[in-house]
Structure formats: C-alpha cells, structure tokens
Length: 110
Length: 127
Image (cartoon, rainbow over all chains, first blue to last red; front, side, top):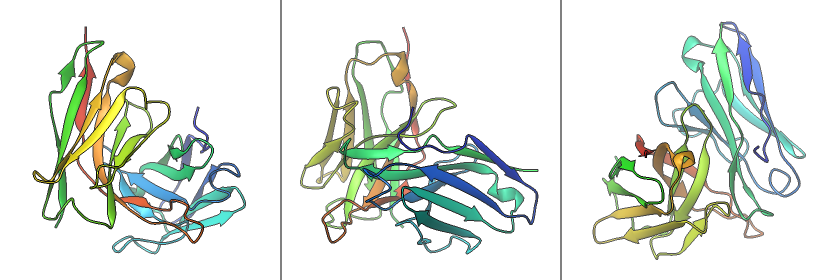
C-alpha cells in the first residue's frame, strides 16, 4: 500500500482529455514537488513532468501537471494511441525520509 | 548522449545476495549535479525506490530495505553497484538504474527527479 494514492486505471478515446490524480499528505506532496513518469509497455519509465508542472525537453505540451494542497494531477489533452501506458507519480516523503512512488495508473486509449 | 546499462547475475537463490552493477557511458559519474539510483519493479507491479548515491559515496536508502541494501560507487570505472542481501522470492523484480538530478528547494528539501533510466535487468530469486 503506497503512501501516494493513484486510481489503478483511466481511459479515454482519441482526441479526448483525461486527468490522473495522485493524492498524498502533508509530509510529501504538501511540502515537496512531484514528478510524473510514463512507462510504455515493455519499456523503462521516462520522466514526463518534474517539479509539479515542468515538462522536460521533448515532452509534448499535451501533458501538463498541477498541484492543489496534498494532491497533484496529470492532465493529458488530445489523447493519442501512443499515450497508452502506465503513469506514476513520485515525491520525497519527509516522514519516511525516502522517495515514494504512487501505485501507478494504467491509461487505456479506447 | 549519456547512457546507463545494468548488468549482473540474473539468478540468485533465497538467502543469498543479489549484486548488480550500473555502467555509465557518455559522461562522468563524478558530477555534482546528479545522484545515481536504483529502482525496482516486481512483475506486474509498480515502482519501488531502493536507494541513491552521490559520487562521493554518500548513500540514501529506502527505509524498508535499508537493513539489506548497500549501494556503492566506483568513479574509476564509472559504475555504481547494488547489493541486496538475504533475498526472498519477493525480491524478484526488474531492477533499473537511473540518474537523478540533484536539486533542493530554498528550505533544503530534496526536489530532484530521475531524468535518465537504464533499460532494466531482471533479478530472479529461485529455489
């Protein structure tokens, strides 16, 4: 059981938008910045969003991150079939004194 | 283009020690900008941070694994290694090495992120 809660699944049709949530607490998301990773089938994770809202070079602006209190959200607009992947949030937890990952959300593009 | 490559015996028996090495190519491991970390993923499950190390040798471990984990660095070989002792079937996983940007906010809290990952290597515990 992760200290970060993500929905196990999400779905949308091509062209639609979808949001994936990640809920934490005052010892992690409430005080530290969150990163999002995308893991395509059979591949290593890839950095998607860092410091809550920043996109690394090469990540399309269809992907965006936001934070509100002890929760963060990853929004994907204009869904494409190649967005079908697992998505993980991650943050440093001050109480645990370690890095924690959310349980992951499997995104299906219908 | 910096790359990371995991290597090591993929099969270990219960109670033995799993040893993996990550070789960094295309750049120096002795950088003040980065940590170097290990993350694992059991089959069909999510990601778990194992620990990270700075080129000076300072290491940070997942509290749940700390008693069994040692991460070390060899700057002369541009490598860092993972030793996980007393393994059980629960330690069977895909083990990734990754580069972590070393960043802190104005209150000295850790705000880094893994920006480059290896392809992963399977660590399988069998009896």
